[in-house]
Image (cartoon, rainbow, N blue to C red; front, side, top):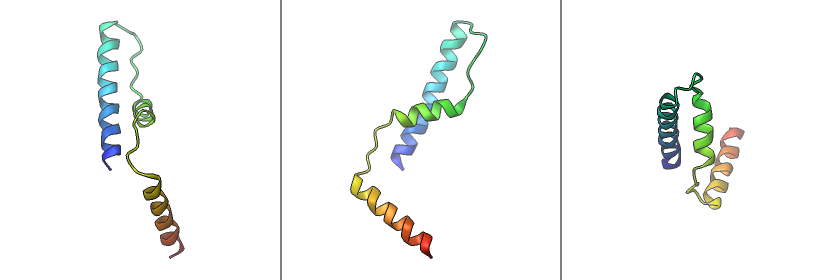
Length: 67
């Protein structure tokens, strides 16, 4: 959960910085694509969950899906 929160904050910060930078440079096209910011943030966020925890989570998903 903390990884997701961190990525969301990172995306928000990136969007703000980009908006300020583009405004200062009087760019005619200001990017407002939030998806790009979130995709960038997620790909640049180090995960803190171990492979073991991921495997357990995937097993839980499989078990619940069978119900």
